Length: 457
Ligand code: FAD
Image 1 (cartoon, rainbow, N blue to C red):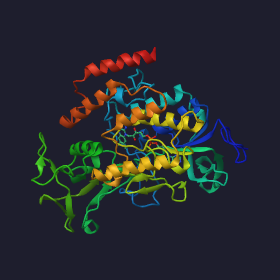
Image 2 (image 1 turned 90 degrees about the horizontal axis):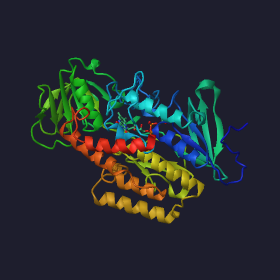
Image 3 (image 1 turned 180 degrees about the horizontal axis):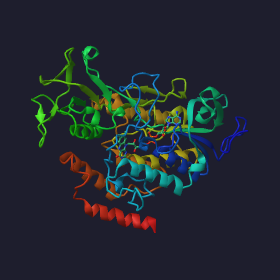
């Protein structure tokens, strides 16, 4: 028998659509809500035993700390124990479900709360919008393929049935991919690393600083995780040396307030005696290299005859980071952009996908979408950016959000949210250690509260 929300492959096409959502993190949850609001029939497939995706902290780490062994058992989340959000809760929350401080046991009322509070927020969201009935936990999607009728066969395995139990298949009109992109490590290429005797790991497998007691640690990267993790490790390590692309030439810079914390240029090579040599000519004898070098997009279940490609971390060709022109609107991706505020962005992308699937919003024809993609690639090339920056929206994320909102007939993102994002970003750059507890944008917080009070009453 077919489950609720699923049509047989012989069902006539029409509205409402049956839609499979892959993943029940922030993107999958809000996609499910928007699809159902639009009237579609939705099934969410989630590999883990609970919702929340990235925000489900897992003490466990993978057998290969660099994440290179393709046969390893995957741990989804890349959170570390001490992680607090790098966005204030006012900015971070969904547009119509404010991330306000709630009272109650174990709640974290801070403006930049710890990771457990974000999970509680997502659980509140799922409960308040009654999403749980649509979600199948411990159900991993193994394969997604278009069938002869132009619909999607989704092959999945339910953990409860046991590994030997094989798989099941169902057919859907549309598929929305929300599988996250902070699980599959990218690591730095370092000449001489194969004979370097120290330990290497990726930030995906970093949890707590205690194992680094008295060690000399080299951290590669300058992302939010690199900044947080190097400070976390400092509490136990003997020395921390950050190799950063932003530090070009010159001598290593000792960080103010520390006598065991330096920032260097990138690594030039590693040697057999344990030495790590930086491009600035400085060197250290290190015990550990910690790669905080980001992640790769990875869609092992997607069987689209190479219509969707991942090339130097560019997922393409995608119209506005969401639709594959030749299969629009039947296959879509929610949550790919980075250097953004993810929750509201996913919310707006989801509204667009839901409306495109119902036909309430029209997409341009395939040629027009391809032209748009081509133009965006040319802009990236002209700016001298590598392909892997395709989904980096740091310079235009709110423009993008507002464009999505306009497609759906909605007003632009609130002005206070845009200004607060800028204010926090500047504060973070100047005060990387204190920005979560000291700020000077209370006037924007007050504006946000007025908005939230209006929504909550
Ligand atoms: P995820 O949360 O990763 O969810 C994807 C889901 O898909 C998972 O539950 C996974 O189990 C499931 N899945 C994957 N493959 C399959 C499959 N084959 N079958 C079934 N299910 C599958 N964002 C902020 O807004 N603020 C922050 O402060 C912040 N800090 C961050 C810190 C770190 C260290 C990291 C890694 C990310 C941070 N982010 C932050 C970004 C964060 O990832 C997003 O906020 C958001 O959680 C992304 O949601 P998602 O649903 O796209 O992906």
